Length: 66
Image (cartoon, rainbow, N blue to C red; front, side, top):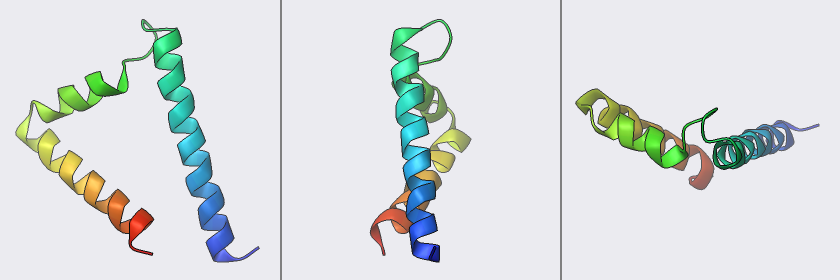
């Protein structure tokens, strides 16, 4: 297995886990917060905004700059 294939498998697993958590947050709203609520909570604090910008930048660099 090449490193590239392993990378795609890992990103796919992360994506499936994220979609699973998103779906679970709507099926059981008391168990997990909705993704929009989490992002909204992070965006209300200045440090949270920096974390969001750096996180989206890192994600974009690693997903789209290949």
